[in-house]
Length: 71
Image (tube, rainbow, N blue to C red; front, side, top):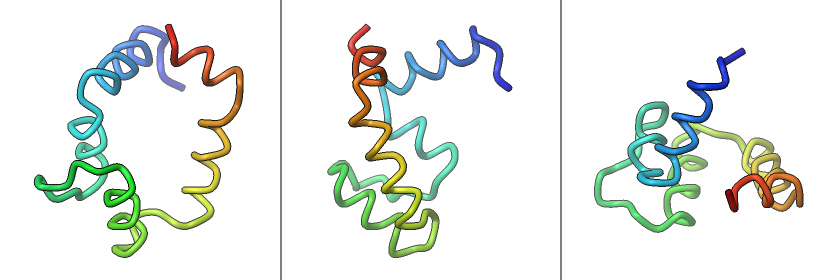
């Protein structure tokens, strides 16, 4: 489990530069900026599964998560 300060730091980095954060874990070509294009690339290259994408979308649509992301 991550400590709260590390989690907050990652949250701030994700808000300021999401591609840089994602590129630490995934292989994303530098010329990709469109979120849908990135998701399709990750699916096509097997870096994520459709189930993982679906789970992320469900989380994104969760009202509690949306409230947290507004802060």
